[in-house]
Image (cartoon, rainbow, N blue to C red; front, top):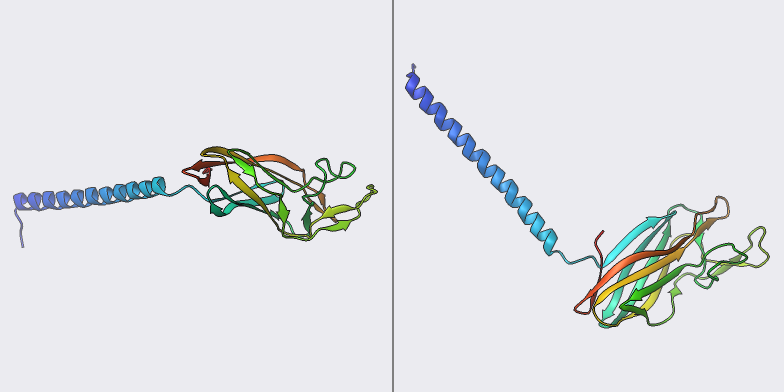
Length: 195
């Protein structure tokens, strides 16, 4: 069947318009999806848990049992490699004879400690070559610590974390002291800063 050149151009033009319309709708749909995802991200509440990894240990922080103005700050210290342990929270700040660093959690700003830092793991003493006194450490693997906290109003707060991990076979990682993690208290509710 022969189609006149005028009808062929009209059909081609209609097809082109249809394809352009479809492309425009698809682009609008993509932009709408992107806009909706952006709005959802903007409307999402700030995180109530956060974590970081430094010098062979991943630390996960969360606020639990929050009944304004009090709650519990939980920090889980997880060595990245098997066979590594953390030092006791009771270890002196400079270690024993300069060896080791305590597992430490402190708060500043509008959050204050409302009790003593405790750990769920039992302490055991080990001997370290060159150190006369026994070293108080936790068993190899993760250690969960809890710190009762209270808020003194809305505003900014910082959690300061310290630790060192060691292995009887591989030695120790570089100690971490006062690693800061930031929180905000808004309407009496603590949330970690997004990072």
